[in-house]
Image (cartoon, rainbow, N blue to C red; front, side, top):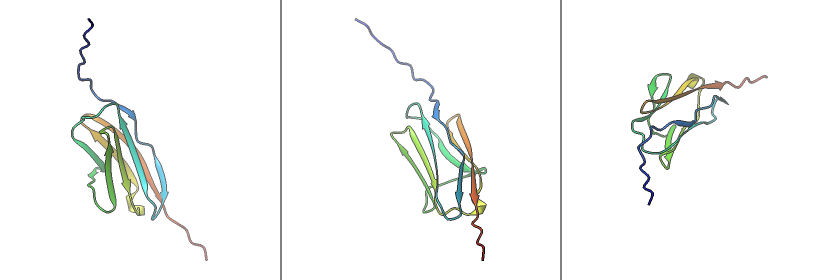
Length: 104
C-alpha cells in the first residue's frame, strides 16, 4: 500500500502578462495564469492605482487559475504599467494606447 501525502505548494505564475499596444477606443485584455487555485489577495493595478470591476474595467477569473483584466474604450491617459498581484506573486506589462492621426 502506497500513501501519497501532498503538501500545499506555493503557487507560481505559469504565464505572465504580455505588453499590449492598442488604439484609442479599443479594448486591452491582460491574462495571467497561475499554477493552481486558492491564491488570496488577487489585485490588478494600473500605474500604482488599484483597479475594480466596473463598466470599463472587467476583472474575471476562471477556475481560480486564469485571471483576466479587460480595459474597455481605452484613452491615451490609460497608457502605463499594468500589474497583477496574487499573494506574493507579481507580473507586470506595459499598455501603450496609440492615438489616431486624422489627415485632412
